[in-house]
Length: 155
Image 1 (cartoon, rainbow, N blue to C red):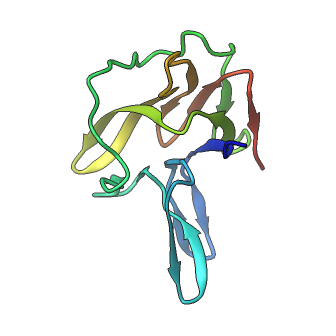
Image 2 (tube, rainbow, N blue to C red):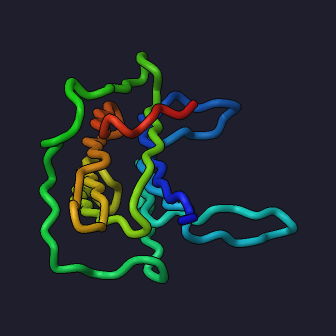
């Protein structure tokens, strides 16, 4: 029996501070491929992550590699209309999708003074079919998410 693979994509908008702490918007992709144990707690490492704060882009290069296949930065082939989050509507969108053992990811990022202001994230199966799984259009004030019919909303 083959192991079931999945991806999780989480996008949130910047919210007002809570308990005096800022809550910058985030965009995170986790494949569950890598975990670390710190202080006895096992944590899943995200492959791609960014937030609405300076120098926040993180890419786990140990589990990622460049590919030649071009992934369109469009929601074509995914359910429409998108699910949308704003500071007054949900605040975040999280989806989980069953996937091939390998996925293809493309990220386009716009920054201003080192702070991410706009991101497009496309995720596709890495198998022979290269089917689209998810597409996120992210800003700190609005997140629009498109996902495949095989994906489900989380939390």
